[in-house]
Image 1 (cartoon, helix red, strand yellow):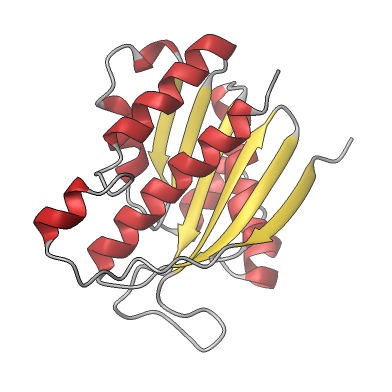
Image 2 (tube, rainbow, N blue to C red):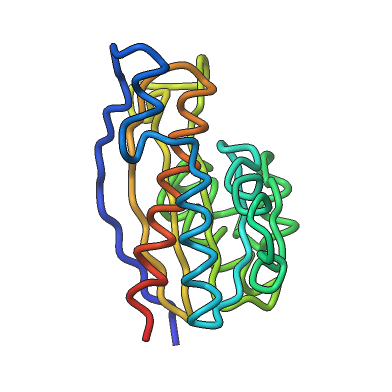
Length: 190
């Protein structure tokens, strides 16, 4: 049976003119630690194991999760598959898929999420790929474009995001969005 994939588009505006101190105090404006704790709590209650494959976020999702005590009971593996060779060799992403759609695509994010779950033996997989900038963008794939896929037991959901800001800001935004998407996906699981 072929895994199901759904793609949704999301547009994020992460620009803020407020001083950093006031941004940090706003609800939801934290560094992602509280979100990582919520992800862990749901993984634990629902007894779901997790593996993550990151590209453009450079390991930030894994970093946030591994700050949570006890996460090793649910988090099996996290890898940074930055190059296309790593995506194909380590995760089994088909070369032809990258050639057809490009490394920054919903199709590749989906294959990354399913591939890391399969290779780690996890119930859930998360894949993130994008253009963090400041260079590397194109008219069709601008800087800030990120695809995140959440795989859970044969079904994959993919979302397209467009973040703004510095390279660091895009990476942080992608990591938070990945955790939010994962949380929404696993919370629906019975």
